[in-house]
Length: 280
Length: 276
Image (cartoon, rainbow over all chains, first blue to last red; front, side, top):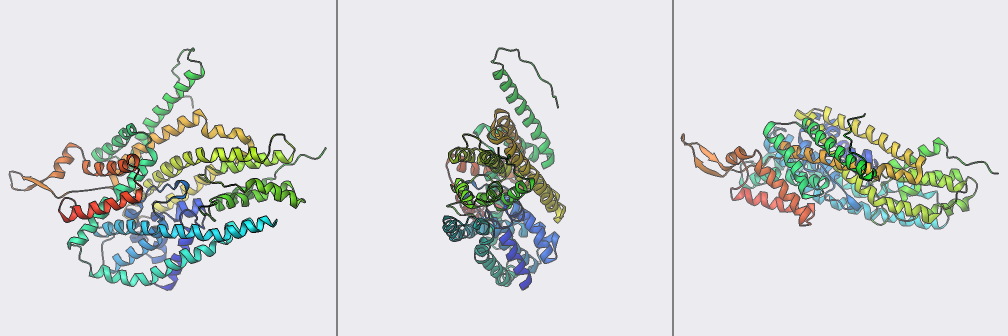
């Protein structure tokens, strides 16, 4: 990996720095931060869009839903996207692996889990260091300098990110690349412990999906909808878009029933129930 | 009588974009979105009280208290406070720091719940899911689709709630947390549940090499082929539901479940229960 590539990846990691991303919430955290998007952007950096995207898919699947209520994060995707993914890519490339093959995909999933969990330290580091600027900001506001809030909010956190995100990411990418390339080249995927790591990689996406399931399921009986979607996709090969259509049918029925109930309530339960047709 | 004060479109745009970009850039666990909020409101305060710096400081104090919600849907709160500040500058009665902060504090929780479950928990994963499908074989169409659709729809949505908040003030809340909105939200959750099921079946594949018998030709019959014959993907489904159950009913954190599954996967592979 060249210095220039490592520097670009370091800057991307600041823009995509999970919750306090310098690219903002929508474009930083929810766009550049996601492994699939990182796969595309890193593909431009490495000149291999196809390879990087292929490797990013198992990494993205595992963390398909990262919900961060009250600032607690289960994983920091900046580390997955801008440490795990570039290193997995250079390693797999050096070893001549098929990016779409089982070995590369399993390793990518395992690396995704590891970097995601370890990367949480970056998130807490960022959050803590920002306290310095906020502390200074409160002191300024106290003195009547309310104009400082822009500086505190959008400029000074760059210093945090240069130290907590840019430096470690750049150095890990630059110096970790050689080590990872060596490691991957010597790796024999038939050895029991590598097999075990690949199996771990196949089990972990189940956890990613379960995080998402927890976000949409409010009561246990909701699981029946999950099972319906699961069996249709597993038995009939329903694609996601097709599942969206089928799910839409259930959703519309649910909505209509709820609205009917509301109408009845509003009518004091006295008025007749009229079956109201679609009136869009 | 003094002329009615009205926020210019320019100021409202500045406020919106400052919030859109800066809601969490200076995140800390102590103040979360407070500085992003103050930066957004600074433009409003400056326009309403152009020559009175003491007054500006005084009004800014309203926004010192802690603020945190799902920031995208939370744009409505920023819009509401823009409307309230405008009314306060025109001498409307009953609008004071307490009233404004009552609204802010009262909306933080419900909006975070709606935003986290609908935007972050349902909309983004569905878009990403579609993007993963489009990215099959390493095609850039998937990520490009996500970048465009997500950013455009999000900006339109956030602008809309911000504008609604500004126009309607406190009553804007009904748009998002009224009965109809709740029915809509529940319906979208149903959609999400079906899709998550399809995602689990499409993306997760857990297998076991256990052999239970030989058939008449002497070929191995695996346990997994029998299970799949009864319910395709049964083992995968069980792993997903178990992980969900640990989080939802045993209050385990996602990271703990992850570590548990690392152990299960590793040990399962070594003793020959899991793997292909």
